[in-house]
Length: 313
Image 1 (cartoon, rainbow, N blue to C red):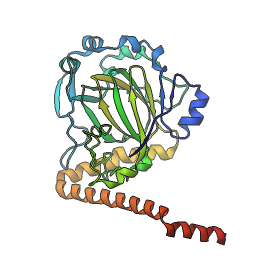
Image 2: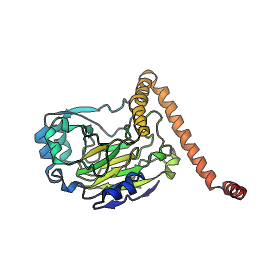
Image 3: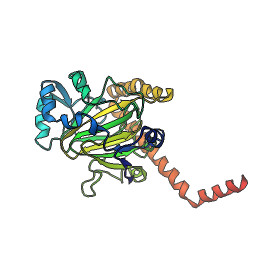
Image 4: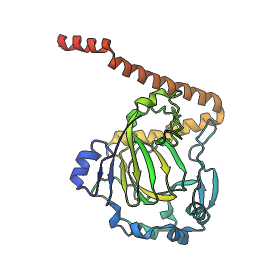
């Protein structure tokens, strides 16, 4: 993989943010955006346990999905208090995602402010909490609603691997899903990495970003960005989501939410193994075409053809 660092700033003017990152679809880490919020110093394990300790939550393990796995179905259930006890003690490969704790304790929405000066379209009904124990993993995917995201880390550290949506075929995207066939676990460690370049050779050409989020850091993830996250420490983060302003982006999101997902769910119920095998085959075919196209662009024949076309014009 070809990875670079993400631009990082302490703060940024709305004008610079919109011109350099929002409009160009480039990720950014803002160090001080959340440090002015009461949540920066107020939100901790004890605070959430007191507010929501008895709330039932779905929890997810590190196992990648297979032919039978429904979309966003929890692997187990417990209370938020029991979960906090488990992950705050140390390594625990369980996570919670898309948890709208604000619907259970609406008063905590006063602990942060919406950065409307940076972008419009925030879905203010559903700020979401993401919680993970040390060692838990969110496998490579992009968000189905194709929204812009401001993802703020409030406790612990988290390693993040990012790719623009355009890299989807090099990442072996499963058709009719938002997930990658490849396992990126421990991608940053040459000794422990699960990445199989023999099985997934196009990954060598994927161009993305690598970063670590710490307490108070806010990551801007443009719409459609692929992301893989690993919890270095037990911790939690909040995502504020903003819909794309244009009609095209909203229609693509609607297709993925209502069309693509329902088709995939139906096929997993009726012919799971054949459906998965077809998706796996197509993902490898797409990746092979990407490799072939890149090899052609770098070949002497391609260079000679380009020279002929330039002279002809």
